Length: 114
Length: 109
Image 1 (spheres, chains in turn red, blue):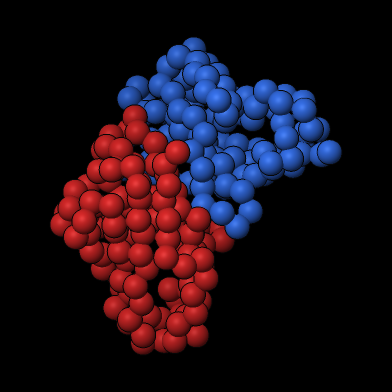
Image 2: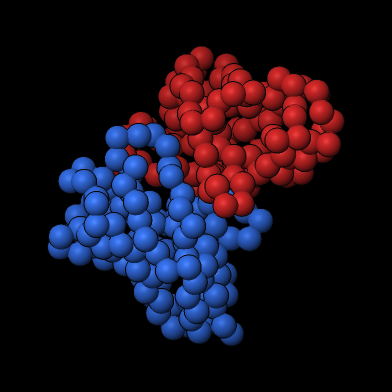
């Protein structure tokens, strides 16, 4: 079974802190994704990566950056956390690019910024 | 992104089949139909996907209408563990998944 793990299930940070969310997948997938999920807004794509050191902006990249130094690991960075970044963050991976391929999600990190 | 329409909620009894409908009348010829589900306090979980033909896997079956304007996810024997929000998603030409409101399935013991 594909396993996508995220570094924390719950995280509380203060406004202005730099926050790192880590995601690791164990199936040698090419693509990795970061989404955030908010009530009434569904899932929104922040960034995705289709290869090591490659990244593409999603729909809401402002205030975030990403890093993919190794194939299995994709990090989401909040440069200066703000209260409107309080959300559930979900990492996903996919074998390849394309509409045929499914995405496998991690358990999520619920981030609270106070 | 092409839109899907699903009932807000459905109820089923344990060990009975469940048919979850999805309408997607504006689907394009190359859109894949994906289904995911999300259990409480967990990330979404891939269930099944298809293009034109019906599909089966260990979790569920997907029945796709001949005109592809609708599809039905079939859980053959619902268990309490199947209680979740089920999302029908059209995937075409974009890497992202667009989740709508989905159908909240309640399974009664």
